[in-house]
Image (cartoon, rainbow, N blue to C red; front, top):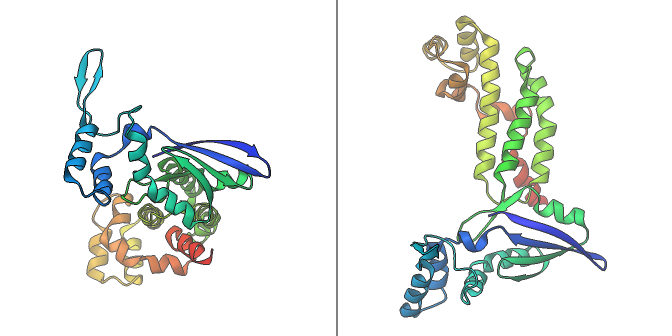
Length: 272
């Protein structure tokens, strides 16, 4: 669920005019009916609304079934959208934000355009029963691209040096997206970064003897180490395999000072 925004100066404040992109086209019927059932006890009314939502759409004389969305222009659609977006209102209230919303159009009052950009740029909303603020997928892709750029040429440098170069990027990114309420993407990114670093180690070791020796130093048995060092699999596969995960756990990277996106955002949220 993306949000289109424009900024309008109004006295000493700036109005963030946020419009949820294609909201009426994308409403999930099951989610909406669940919300309604919590407020409406009349089963006949709920059945009628379900039929209203599922009414087919006619285009050029051909009727096609509707599986999501509400009929735009229908008298009931704005009311249904208000019920579904109540959670958004409650979240804005919880954050102490001044706002005015009708259907999918919401004005949020901030002190400056910069404040509005900080609040929404790069974020999107989840489709949970209670929508939560999350990091937009394009923002995640941009971070992955930036990390790949930093890690270019890291094969010839120490892991400590690589982490020193990487940390400012991770720390700044975590600070920017500290409002996110969805942790899964952060966990996956943290795991992906550690795997990239394990991959660098595996490439640096080059020979089976060196790999086995380093795995034994990291705590694996001689049998495990030699079996892993001679498996003839590629670096990326080995970086995600059980022997490298066991030898170089999250605690190993924590000791080297690697910034964890999940840990950092949670710490910043507790402090705010």
